[in-house]
View 1 (tube, rainbow, N blue to C red):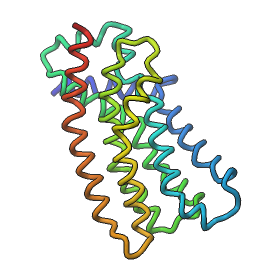
View 2: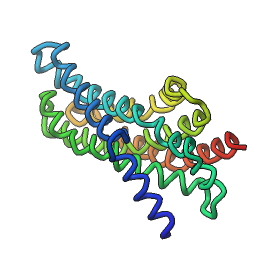
View 3: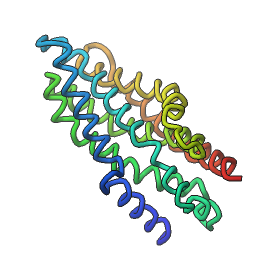
View 4: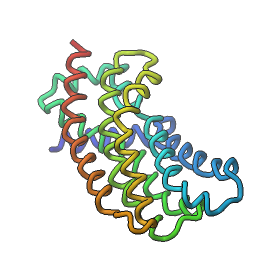
Amino acid sequence: MSAISALFRRELSLATRAGGGALMGALFFLIVVTVIPFGVGPDMALLARIGPAILWIGALLATLLALDRLFQADRDDGSLDLIIMGEEPVELVVVVKCLAHWAATGLPLVIATPLLAVLMNMEPDAILAATATLAVGTPALTFLGAIGAALTVTLRRGGLLLAILVLPMTVPVLIFGVSATTAAVMEPAPFMTPFLILVALALFSMVIGPIAAGAALKHGLE
């Protein structure tokens, strides 16, 4: 457990330091959410209606922005080989790295959501629903993104390929995240049904993501 704890602290430190990608993701999320209203115009009813989609698309793109750093830095300095040959299972290492990535990248997005939702003229119920769905959905984006990051870790410039691989896998998370948030303010649309499906997708990604990413890392470094 001491080794796992040390790995988590190391990953969190690397992600939050200058150039680590965490601040860049949060700033990108802020830019997307604040710029779109200028393009849409002063129609406050329209902003409230499309607000959940804007928040979710911004969170998805901000998460993708830092995914290429999940394994690439360890690959460049050779520490990834040591991690794979270590005593801890590779899948557990992937889980720790994903949790650290989410804590540095996804959690700030969740914290910023209530403030940015106000800019979208969203109702309090919709703000609460958007925060809850992003808190559940952003870990799913990270764990699914880990699969693409592991598949492209041996490529020098695999950022575009990473986005192409990950985006189709994240579409269900995006659909049910936006549906649950929209349903919170549109009667009689049920909130719990899409929200529970979103929870199921998050749990599934937390199981399948580390397994698939671990297998890709082992195969890529053979």
